[in-house]
Amino acid sequence: MTGSSGFIGSAVLSGLLRARTGGRIAELRLLGRTPPDRHTLSRPGLVWQHADLAEPRSLAGTLDGTDVLLHLAARTSGTVDECETVNTRACEVLAAEARRVGLGRIVHLSTAAVYGAGPHSGTAVDEIPPAPVSAASATRPVSSWGRVTAGWSRPWTS
Image (cartoon, rainbow, N blue to C red; front, side):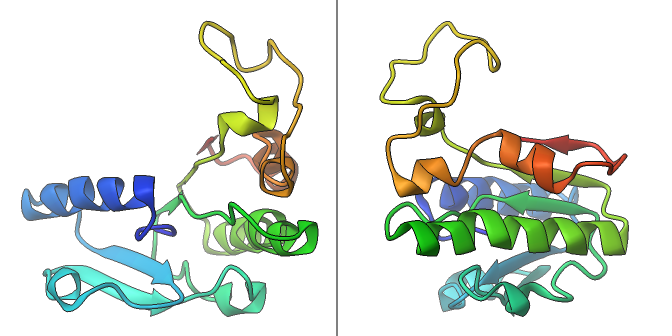
């Protein structure tokens, strides 16, 4: 799992830790620049592994032995180059790693901001064209996973 310290990722992590306690998850691997707090790390079945999305080379081998990737991390501010590195290049590297290990499923979190300022209620995914409002949203379109996983027959969710 990437993004476990973020707003959405921390809520997802909390739910996954409850599922882990219930025996539905054997091991939960958190990928990140800095380890979580000691209390979180003390949980049985939780493993932290250093991986920095700003350094895509650090992602090599991070998916070994996994069967699901929850990619919830993103760069939400910064220059176009910084956002491109984290939001696009790191996705490409994670997708390559997923292919290499035969990963069973990818869940990728994007943002409605790729479609502009909104509101976005009542619209289907393909009903409005992308109209990103920032470097961050320009590098996170839903179609980015379609591009990086092109030709890959595994299921993925964005």
